[in-house]
Length: 103
Image (cartoon, rainbow, N blue to C red):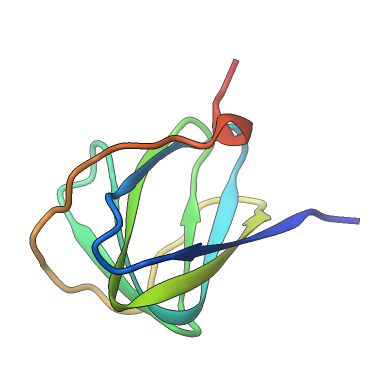
């Protein structure tokens, strides 16, 4: 059995900072998601149907595009790449879900 969590982000909602406790696959279910990972020079824009894998220990910042975003997080086996990459302005940082924090 594996755990899958679903989140919805609204447009103009401040970016969320997540510290990854275990490898995770970020799956965009609807809308558009902005994602950046500390130490990575790129910003990523993911559309519905696209996935991005985060390594254990990574700190990722996520925010929604104009239509908002619905995403799921699934425990992954490793780290991979996204399909589409696009540069945009960086939103403000704020909240970090406790269940994603490393000890």
